[in-house]
Length: 418
Image: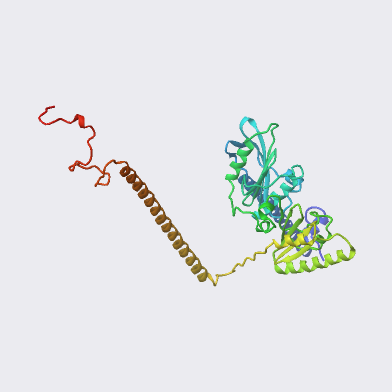
């Protein structure tokens, strides 16, 4: 093998003149170049994706926080919701985007506005109920109302509500109390889509729902409920994989927990585990629920009730309402349309008959009343007459001279002139 030395050292000449080794080196350098280009493309792709995600979040946050809300204006760009995160309220996996911003109103009053958008309205209601439970530690009488948004509650410094799929909390940062926080809450609620404008159906199925919805705690797509009642070991037996919701309320005479599983199989599997765990707790002499029953896809627990009869009364009030949805065309759509048509027609007919009957009764009543009044007046006038009247008390000519003159002295005699 011969080497041709070019300029430089022999080693340099060997790299340049040996044809076989040169091909291998060219392939080696080409491989390095390709790997570097691929690595650079990956970095660019990930960097672009991260930049796009950040830009998307900024765009979504700007939609959540308008520059002006009524007489209030935003003083800074939105930031991450650190306060909600520190308080453990912002822990739902359903969160899409969230942040906080400061607004200023009249007299330079400052307000902190925190908004979180979730995938479903039930998630927003869940955050509201968790925030209410946290605030109830300082104000035990606090209840949910509908003064702002779909549901809300208010404390001395904050107004918290949910509307549609958004959770909103407004905090007064000024030292003095202000009524402008109410105006800000209402103005901000008007800018949010109301969605279905309703609370989750599971809360409505609690015992005494009208009262329960004021203090109920709703947790959507949970993994564990052990922190809710730490001394109840039966709650650790449930396995949901975030495919279940729960509603909890303390009625005063017992604590009721209703768990809704999203599939019948999940409900059955957990029911078997719960029953086995309750029997185990009984055998060990440990604390167990006062009452338990599976109702449809619900698991209904009653804790700390006075006796089993009271627990049974609570459970009997929980009704599971099954909802059937057709994946394709509803085969009973014609029957449903016919039923609605018959109901509508029957309703219109009944309404017309009621209106007609009411009109007839009203006319007869008014006619009878007016006739009675006229008859009474005629009778009273006829009774007041001193002589017989053949005209029923009406004006007559007195041709028969039966009616006496009013003043005979003022009449002119025969041949007298006025």
